Image (cartoon, rainbow, N blue to C red; front, side, top):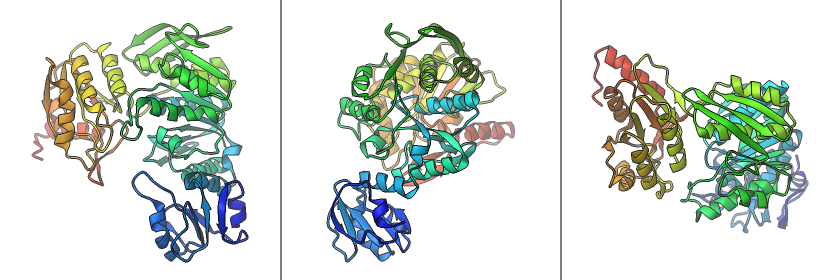
Amino acid sequence: MVLGELIEKIKFHTLCANLEMTIKGVSFDSRTIVPGELFVAVRGYESDGHNYIKDAAENGAVCIICEETPDVDVTYVIVDNSRIALAAISAAWFGYPAEKLKIIGVTGTNGKTTVTSLIKWVIEKSTGKKVGLIGTNINMIADKEIDTELTTPQSYNIHELFSMMVLEGCEYAIMEVSSHALHQNRVFGIVFEVGVFTNLTPDHLDFHSSLDEYAETKALLFECCSKAAINIDDDYAQLMISKAKCPVLTFGINDLSADLAAKSVKLRADGVSFSALTIGNLSRIELGIPGMFSVYNALAVISTGILLELDMEQVAAALKTTKGVKGRAEVVSLDKEYTVIIDYAHTPDALENIITTVQGFAKGRVVTLFGCGGDRDKTKRPLMGAIAAEHSDFVVVTSDNPRTEKPADIINGILAGMEDTKTQYCVIENRKEAIYWVLENAKPDDVIILAGKGHETYQIFGKEKIHFDEREVVAEYFLNTEAGIRDEE
């Protein structure tokens, strides 16, 4: 492909390169450049690609896309925003695969992973079509799984995944759309068939200046959708609706004006059931994932189905057969007198949701084990401490992903919200030791919530990622206990 074809749809104000130049590849990482490739210098959250233009040139980059004149002898194109340029160039490089798919984007603080996974399941079961998925847990090309680390990957990787989906015969693509991705133009140029808003609660305030700014960023999704499904019960619903440049279908439980409403809601230990009411249609819905938040997640999925013109009977049948999502209210298989649940809850709202859900069916104590991530929003730490203490019978405060912070400092931030609590709690910094302790001290009918890690199979200390799967830790505890082994770590 020649340079002119790649930059055909981007705005540039300085061209110091031959438009007929052959480009053999596109990269935004100077370390992976091979001779003949185009390098896009992206300004990142932690580093600036402009600082690595010299490295890219030395590694064989034949042209640089950048926002300022390079100080090395290399051909270049200057643009106003290299992130937008990367998105447009990536789409062109892979042959505009997004235009060959019906793309559904889901944004919000909580519920994105469950909603995207359920939408994929429902479309596949209702239509028989192949569906791709880009999410926090995993990326999927139809049935093929690809591990992922970012909720929404960089734009180049998104279009690469779209291209793989098209080649595999997918007709739909479902993706989680994070506020970071919207702010950093990772989904620039993508037209979503349906945009979905789940909810908005405090999170990522280390990245966003305020909750309102966080909401405004989320709302950007609805400026590039053909249709929108919005949770009208959320405080920020009206903002999302006001930003939508497309028809909007609202869903909810409390707001009587909702286009899709859940009535006669029944909450059980093994799931939820309710009547989904729209004009001219009433469907009985059953979902094997407990909690009121599961009703909202189901409504988001049903709304998407309506906007995609799927058969409602088939949508209801598909929801009834789903097996849930790894790390979301996931019950660990144990032959014990107590229950262990693994959940990804890492925000105040999500933590309150899972604990109150468990309260609804627990016959014994609700025991919550959790920590908070390092190098992330510090304001939510005391909030989560207060929520855990208010709704649990016992709390174990431990580590999550400390990253470059001292675990003790993070824990102290959590404890600040528990100063006046009468709820019993203990602090065990090492997460493995904390899990061992809570299992050793479990009582009959207890429900133990291991919150924060969910689907993750690692912990991050400094910049190093250590393998850590809570399912394995629980299994190892019982294996060692039955063998009479004491872990002395």
